[in-house]
Image (tube, rainbow, N blue to C red):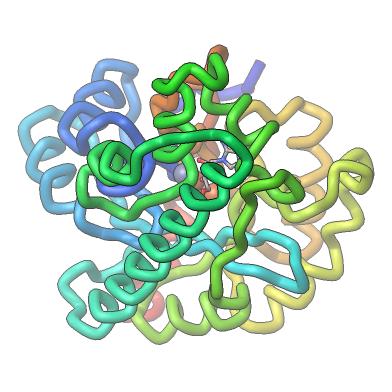
Length: 290
Ligand code: AMP
Ligand code: ZN
Ligand code: FE
Ligand code: FE
């Protein structure tokens, strides 16, 4: 049990990427769960922020930190970089995000073709419909596979078809984490490493100190924090990551990475999150940079 009430969730997705709640629905849920500060961190999109901010203005005592999540690749390992206090009114940022979202469309089309080659037939129109015009991702394809009754849950679609190493896995010409960090810093945002365990192979995951070289490299280019209080991490994982984060001088972040995905047992907002002190430290960085 966390030794503090959960008031903060700094990792949440909406319909503007691969979440299934609209920004307004998500804000209302977080408010009902008693959260005080949340960050909307859609993949390659800030389009949900205006609606989330409007909705937060209507409920009381809920603050929105504008955020984003960028997918990157480091020597074949997946690294996601969160950016906080991103300025969604920045036209250059929007140009870059549009390019990243176009890359997602091309890749999703190739995945749908590849699935068809191995006998999993889903319609591209349905995948697009599920994406609702937001940043399209593998979870939309997973949902279409569930609907077509090839598997029961989206996670099964990842395990059998879409995950790294599975037959319909396609990488994307992505940023490196270093370039994502530099991009976020240039645009005035604060970069944080998301779910550090995802970056390790299954065999390396029990030994979290294996993440150290990547953390050191990302610190060198300006990382300010890493996720520690994340989703379904065990207290042992949290402790190990808290130690790595502390040693590296990073702020410990976290949240549920809630997608309302339909997977059983998905941790919901209010289940886990960083302490309020994380928000204070992030704001101190922002105020210092002004
Ligand atoms: P994409 O952005 O298209 O590469 O898809 C990445 C998203 O897929 C992540 O943010 C998760 O929401 C989801 N995802 C990745 N791996 C899995 C998995 N094994 N099971 C369920 N969802 C996953
Ligand atoms: Zn996602
Ligand atoms: Fe992620
Ligand atoms: Fe995420």
